[in-house]
Length: 329
Image 1 (cartoon, rainbow, N blue to C red):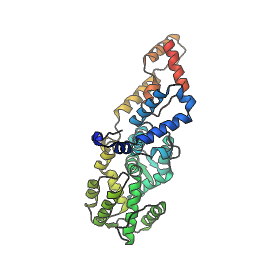
Image 2: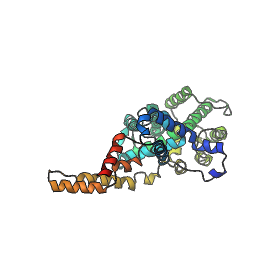
Image 3: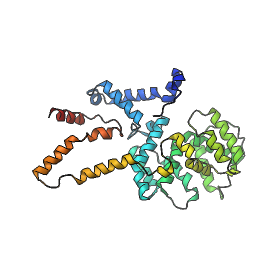
Image 4: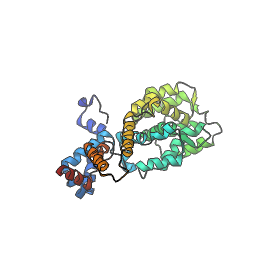
């Protein structure tokens, strides 16, 4: 979790609002009460320590409900980062996946992840593409914009629709699911969606939106840079350019730059270690080989502990028993 370097100058209320401490504390207590018998045997202090360590490390969102993973900017950033780490091999292999397949991958990490989010991501990329399959790179950067800036994207879509219909751009924007669906339908029905709206007017409206916006939004500098590069712009081409903007990607800090997207030395080393373990596992009933394998295994760190640093809290009773037994032996 990124910390504001000026956090010591914040008031108590500002600090709590920025870090969402009360949200996480409430969730921690709720989880504790729901699984009281399971967690209390390890000690309440240890439970809270491990919960907030997982929040700090960003692995707290694994297998949680969608309402939780989208509840805070840190949760959204963490989920995007975990999705990348789990499935970047798809990009290394050069595979193209359909939207239903990306939706299935997301639901492996979040069982109730909505397919609508994936469909909205597809509209960003497929506007200039004849196929309905996407590379991992195209998908994940567009998904990052759609998911992390969801409220901003919805509000901008209403602005764009109003400009297309000739409405007053200074009208207060209140996005609804109906208005977003109408925009999607209008964009798909337009014979030439690239014609778009006047970029300067669109930029002014977005600036006005950001001045009163309570949710996360891309930097005004990046937005101006994109919209000042052409006289007219379409909604989805604007989002696509946002997705490709390195400055916007760095501000979110969930993904590396595109040139480094498929590089993850830490994960590669972990995979090599696991493959090596499989390769040296005993394949016969030779007692000496078995004893040697057991001796080497005892010297290695517990896989539960190493995986725990990258996954959600797993305080299972059998794990505690295993550690106790090994220490007694």
